[in-house]
Length: 207
Image (cartoon, rainbow, N blue to C red):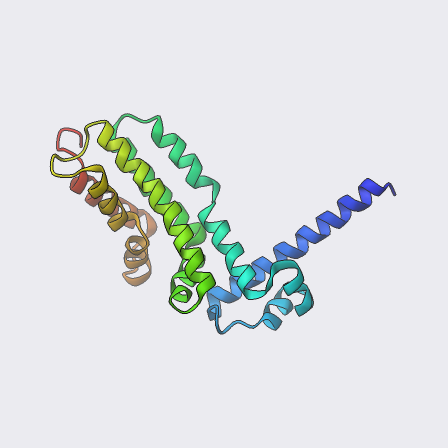
């Protein structure tokens, strides 16, 4: 076997091992919480040794940072931002963050919950949450600025206030409250949040 092929096999095995550890940690953090989960349990779930969990993934703290990166740097965020820049219809612009937020909740809501619950008691989680929140708000800020530039906002709402309103509806609490706490479906929650945010932000003519 050629040296390049051997290196490729080793790289594939290393990546598969890393992914198995991340997947096991994600499931255990979701089910038991960050603090109640032990490295030994992650190792069992990934079918590796505890030493491998530390060497490959940096233990629990390294895994939590990895999960924050998976959530906050998801490709859909950049894709949505690029799409919004090219839109000129205010209602269409509003639909995009509503749809993106729903998709993020469905795909990464478990990670968000773990980080939000852990951050008040752990510096790594707090740092990760601050980074994720900054990226999150920057995306919504681009929506607010674009709407302001189009003259689509209500007269008493500037770009800064629009960002705060968008955060109120599409930040962490909206979908969690409606779906997790109240039992709404994701489509129902998305439709209600979109309607409420649109009414709060857009001039009647623009809406």
